[in-house]
Image 1 (cartoon, rainbow, N blue to C red):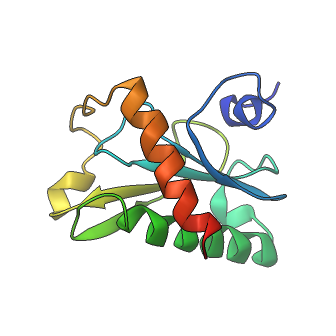
Image 2 (cartoon, rainbow, N blue to C red):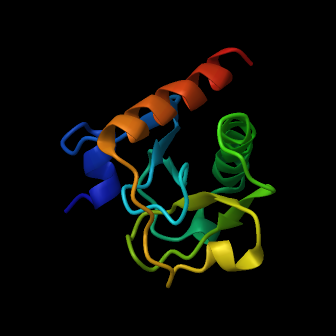
Image 3 (cartoon, one colour):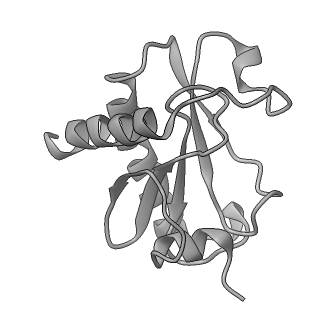
Length: 133
């Protein structure tokens, strides 16, 4: 059975897509810890990040770096925090979260409210920074 993220990749479930290439996809988290909270995933369904082939993991991290740098241009924050937990969906994913302090990256925090219109606009703006690189 395909994972939730595979269903997003295949277009069965909509998402606020920021960027994608043949191997990776970045989209806004619909339950964000902060405005701009983004998920970066490999298109190849892999349950655990450290089971990925070295070249796939390297590609994922380099793709995440490009997305994080573009995200910084649109969201005011001290840094883009990075988290890999891997328990909630059995498909490797990296959380990129705009943060100003360590506690901003606490997954027990309630999600922030971001309207669908704001999510769409933010995804589009971040994507334009990637297109210009």
